[in-house]
Length: 485
Image 1 (cartoon, rainbow, N blue to C red):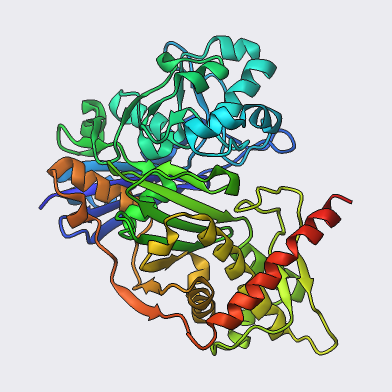
Image 2: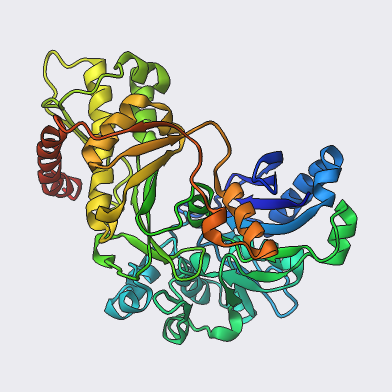
């Protein structure tokens, strides 16, 4: 029986997952990673730590599951997006990787973000993207920049170590602001604007396409067979979409982590950058995806938990599970600014409508509703979102039945909760490894997960939620004016 390995290089850890031919997880391992912050707004990691973490997880798997590792046929990669890993002509690292959540290049991002850039990339150029980071390095670390001969994204540096090949997949490359996203090729114009050329870029492959084979020395070290193929893989959200079967037009997932993500797949390229909606290539050929982001989803509930000194789960449990029409109290979850659709780092959140008899349960429900309204803004910004038949719910917030009921009615879309299991980015990466190693049709591999529960919109409450959402939207101008004094 063949096995397949998914490697997910996150910000806080590297996770490995082995699945069998039936996609049943048989082994997992992880190793922690640390972020350094040498200055305000900076966020960096040493690429050597990624290699050490990969060595750790492979050693653990070799010790605990040698037979599974010995029959691995394909490897898929997933990883944190946007990071700038700078290499010299000998592929030696020149400086710590500048991560996705580093904001030092905000001035360079503003400079690059014009109509030309948006027409090429389909996106606003955010400070977290890779291109403005290189412009910052050219101006602030010129000696480093002069030695740059290759720029790789985090998971692609791991690929270089695994295979000796410099390659990137379309979904991850789309987050650099160097890709002609609609044409799935590097943009010489955007590269030139950051004093680079295609010579410094890795070759591009699709996520289900072979990018190389595992180096013989590494295969011998951990007992893998010869010739293990390594798939192109995907950026973390695209790989997660592969993990939950969101790889066909009309499918989408809702992630309720610290931030919230609404991810929809589409067969066409139809960007709307003015709404701060990300339009990226998907990890499979001929597909794109659109992604709206609210910066404080479960993070809003964590904030309320800290204020009320009660655990989030206990707060939500006390609010009950019955769905009812929203009250006068509104919560705007702009605790750290907002991404979609406002792209406003300065705006801040608020409770509106507090009164003498407002209870903890009222505040909890208002937070859950406010995050749902923010996600509705993401849904309304996506041109193809009306085609979505259901949304798969993932993330810590998906444990709340009440929240999923609210989401279904606010989004006017059924929300499905997967049964217990591992359907994250590492699983999606393993699925891409299956496609690459076997040539299997992605539609046959990227199936929906088993569903534990499905929540339909409550037609008797949809109008009430829509009215509350309208009131929610009307408050943004006042909040943004207040934030700016």
